[in-house]
Amino acid sequence: MRDATPGPDFAEFVAACSPKLLRTAWLLTGDPHQAEDLLQTALAKLWPRWERIAPDRPEAYLRKVLVNCHVSWWRRRWTGELPHGELPEPPPAAADPFEGVVLGQVVAEAVRALPPRQRAVVVLRFFEDLSVEETAEVLRCTPGTVKSQTHRALASLRGRLPARELLLNGGRRELV
Image (cartoon, rainbow, N blue to C red; front, side, top):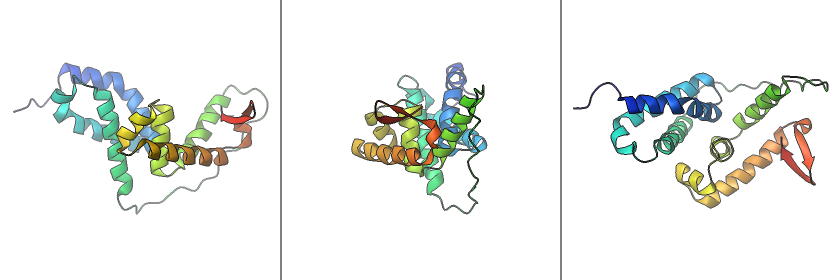
């Protein structure tokens, strides 16, 4: 029979990785409360398997559990409401110390507006810095699917972000 309390190595892992994985969960869900629930659910699923997973890559396994839990959540029949708020007005042209915060909010809102599959690809590729192959492994799809979803997501983000938040760089438009 297994001990009811986690060992120190599990507690250390949770303490070390929770902030990063909570950010990932928040980017996937778009809601801080749902992100906490998602991370707790993933950690609860990780705990019984900890002895087998600990020597390998527990963070990668937990990230995969996070994405899979989120996918199962958005596959459920949705009966709630969807917010339809307008984006905030861009800050004034003067140097604003909070300009980065506003930009982060605008980008986060644009990412949350993506379909769940595209959002998962963007979060894993650009916020978690996973390769195409690693992302495909987490999402259980082919690398070609990851590439096409990334292409569609970035095209959608370019269309949703205000022109002020985009810079021309060598003839290419890139996100700041």
